[in-house]
Length: 295
Image 1 (cartoon, helix red, strand yellow):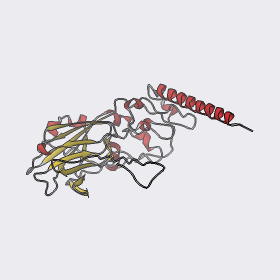
Image 2 (cartoon, rainbow, N blue to C red):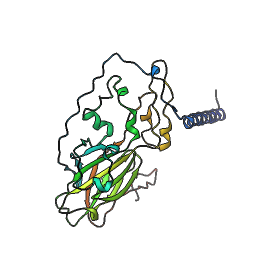
Image 3 (cartoon, one colour):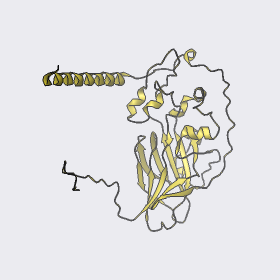
Image 4 (cartoon, rainbow, N blue to C red):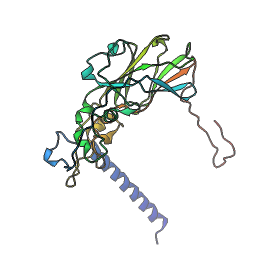
């Protein structure tokens, strides 16, 4: 029979073993840089299915609209357009002019990733079926993109302060409005908030443009086969707690755009000059007594 001393010693040894295991796993994770060059084409998984690319959908002009989600807060829905920056070859100042021509742009899905839009518009097949993902180029995550919309204003927002909220972009965004640079957002789980009151045309057309830049270390995916799993993850880990697994893992293929884009919604919020944001309430309970609390 074990006495208390033996039990304590066993617990201590178990904790040491767990810490060593975690340390080894973290060390291996830190050393994992993934592939340094694309794998041999002969090692790629093969499919007998014929991949047919859908016909691109003609652009349909849509008017941006505001969807009220809660008091004094609206989601900017529809009206979004998307284009690869290398095809646009223009600055944020130019793109946010009302006279800028976007005939070559495509309708964008927001919220959604770059690949979401390209699939919805018929440029690439749905990567969730078969080996369709292999027919989508991995260059999508290595170029920058532009989103653009004509920004409507909520009724009754005159003489109020208006905030622009971006609840999630990936990986980096440069935000422009009516020829003015508002600022940047870096990281897939960082919220962007800008006071746009002084940049708005109260009685005119407002043009919002968001320049999406790729992660600095997109890495090279390893396409798994039954014979070879390959390295998990890779250098995308260097870019912080973003969508690390999208470079490819042992349970997911490499996502070709690394989930870049406006993956969360974009909102307008109307406020007064003074506001309370992100309040935190900490309750102090005099445990074990739970009959009262202090704040």
